[in-house]
Every structure is written in structure tokens, then in C-alpha cells.
Length: 262
Length: 292
Image 1 (cartoon, rainbow over the protein chains, first blue to last red):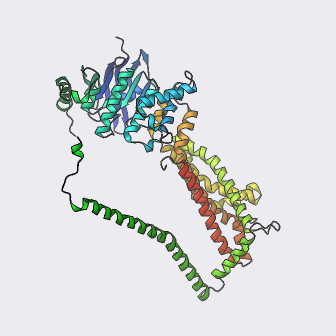
Image 2 (image 1 turned 60 degrees about the horizontal axis):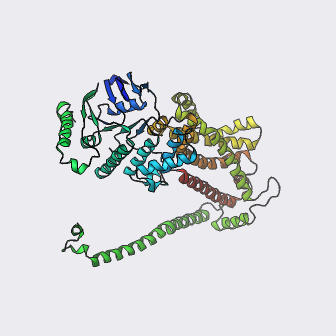
Image 3 (image 1 turned 90 degrees about the vertical axis):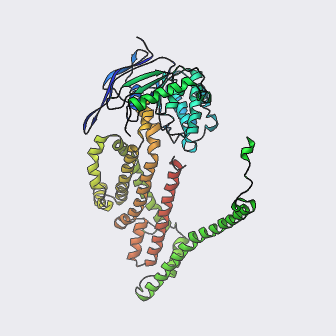
């Protein structure tokens, strides 16, 4: 059966001094175009490994990734990554960080002034047009992550991969960024795979929540479809029965079925 | 909503306006005091140290070593030397300005050569573990060797003193440049390389857009270290090679028993050293993305 992105029988083992460590065991996942899916699970369950395999930054030991029916096994701008710690280049300004991606990805398809306009467009999309000439060290953590998202969006990826994008941010900033991400997703309809350990974040943003079992040999435990109408407003959802039901489902999975002694 | 912004009616005394005003006045006075204190510590204390050293000098000169020139002698000698620093009466009789310029010229040539050759080697060492394993032992053996030990080799190879001195400076400067560049490349966060991979940058683009800017602060640290050591080494090297240069000037004045000139030279060598160091610091600050 066709799906936009599919992971088929992905195993991942790492060689360690203590022998072979099997991180992932037979991970199967299908993502449709325009879908927003979250990967949730306890820390160490291999969420990031899954994302890095999709990104091509890690190669699966066996199994593979199909994107629009083509196998992908090396990194590329069609699977742009928003890194947890933003990974902006500190010697470049906000504008230059995004422009670097634009210049590279559209080297042959757009001319210089189009590059400039597109850089400004994506920075407007994340509401960062006021800080074009600032260096990453001069803006807040939330702003850095906005620019990180802009850089990824600038590549016009087939799928946007976000690795705990808001993990390092305070609750208020995180809420603002979640709203921005929902707004962008509504406008552009991009396909998104996001890693999170935040249950509220997963339910608020996702169409599907992929819950992973604990490692070693982690795999997909359950997939929860979140059928809440969009646009979603966090305040209204707080009293929404369905929302709380979804939330409880995820919590039940994490804390009853796959409880992890911390 | 505005009600929430209102202040409670009863407040402890320290929050009253008058108390705050008093506190601000106090702190303004403190700032003023602080400035004076800074001035005292940055100017008066060093001045005191100099005064004590000169005092000790005078005592030592009078009681123990009457051959030493007095500070006043040295001062007179300095005014003489700097009256015409750039006079030129033949190859063995040039002003102290020329001596300094010749030394600086050798240092800069050897240093630039070391930078040009050392940075690429450092990059290779930073990027390839095989290369590091191959080169590390050799570098570790050669690094602690006094660069002056290379002077005879230089003389043998180049059959002339000037290139030999430059060769010694080159050997002095190259190790810190190689090692700092290599550690700079190794310190590049993996995330930057992941960004490069996602963007599919080619190796030329990776070098230009990521490797060089990310390692530049480390390279500049290496360059700064080399340059200050090179300036120390040139004095010793020139004492051995002769010719025109501040090192030979010191040796020559010793042979003429002009000890006061040596004191002047020591002071001037120090000042040039500070200037080189500050120049490199400025450069470092300009290119260090963390410091801006």
C-alpha cells in the first residue's frame, strides 16, 4: 500500500564495548502527506534514533525508508531537520543562517533576488523578520529555535523532522512556539514528524501520536489518532472531553503499560 | 485588570520613594568611589611596583654591583638611542629602530610561513584520525625541543644566517598553530556537521562555510601563542647569528660593555612583545563569534 513516507522493518544496532546493543527492533511506520505525527516515549527509547534514520544521519542496520516510493538512506534537504539545540551557525546572522540553506537548496532553480525574498518570507513566517542582522548569541532561546524552524522550512522539505524542538525552552515560550508551528502547519500543510516527551504538546499538535515501547529493542507500541478539529486553541481544549481522553490514553500508555523506573 | 497592577497600600520602609532615592544617591556615590578605586589600582599600584624595583636597583647598584648602570644612566642612554633610532652608518652600525625592524621582519616571515604550512596540517589532523595517529608522535617529540637546537641545522641547510633565523622562528611557531588548529577542528559540534549533511554541502563548501569560521578562534589562539614565543626566541637566535637585529644588538652592547643599552633593549623588547600580543588579541576578539 502506498504511503508518503514509510519505515519498513527498521532495525538498529550499535556496536558498544560491551557488545551489540539493539536500539530498535522492527519499526514500521506510515505517514501520509500533510500529516503531523509525534513520536513519544520515555527517554532512551530510541525516538531520536528513529528520527535520525529518517533524516539519513544514521543508517538502519536492516529495513529501510521510502519517501514517495524512493528509498532514502543519506541526508538531504527534502528531510529538513530542526535540531533540539537549534544548531544555528554562531558566526552567521539570523538572515545568513537561513540564506545559507536557501542558496544551497535553490542554487539552480531560483535567482539571487528570489533567494533574498524567500529568505525574508520564511523568516516572516516564524515572526523573526525584526532580527535579521542579529547573531544567534544576541537572541533568546525561543527566537533561536524559530530561526532553526525557518531554516528547515526554507528548504521546502517533503517532511519536516523536529527533534524535541521545544525541549530546552520555558513553558511560556514553548506555548508560543507551538502556536507558531500550528499556524505554519495550517498555512503550508507540510508533513511533520516531531519527537517530544511532552504529552500535552503531542495531543495539541498531532494528527497521530506514535507511542514507543521502552528500549532496548524499542519499537512502535501503539498509534493514537487525534481527531480534534483544527485550528486548535489550547485554552478551549483544556476543558474538552476528547482532548482529555486522548491525553489520558497517552499517559496510560507511558505510565501503566510501559512504566519506566527512573 | 488594572487593579492588579496597583501597589499595596502599606509597604515596608525600604520600598518608600524617599528610601529608594536615598539608596540611589548612595549607589551613585559608590560608583564614583568605585571609579576612583579602579584608577588607583590600575595606575598607582603598577607605578608603586616600578618605583620599588627601581629602588632595589639603586641599592643593588650601590652596595653589591657597582658595574651595573644606574637607572639615570639607563635613562640617558635611552634618550640617546631614541634620539635617532633610524640612523644607518653601514651594516654594523644601525639605530635601535632598524634593529627592531629587522628582528620583527624575521619573526613575521617565520611566523607567516608557519601559519601557511601549519594550518592545513592542523586541519588534516583535526579531520582524520589516521593522520593524527601518524603525525602525533613526531610532533610530540619535536614540540618540547628548544627551537634554538634547530639553528645549526638551519645554518647547514641555508648556508646563511638570515634564513636560518627565520627557519628557527618557523619551527617555534608551527607547533602551537598545528595543535590549536587540530583541536579547533575536533571541537566543532557534530550538529554543525549534521547541518552540512542535511544541506548536502560539498567539501569545499564545508571548509569555507563551517570548518574555517568555526576553527578561526582556535587558530588565532595558536597564532597568538606562537607569535609571543617567536618574539622571545628571535632575541636568543640573533645573539647566535649576529647581523642586524635586537638580539645581536644586546650581544654587541655586552661586548662593548654598554650595559645600560642592554637595559634599554630589555625594556623595548618587552614593549614590542606587549604590542604584538595586543594586536593578536584585537584580531582574536574581532573574529571570535563567542566573544562578540
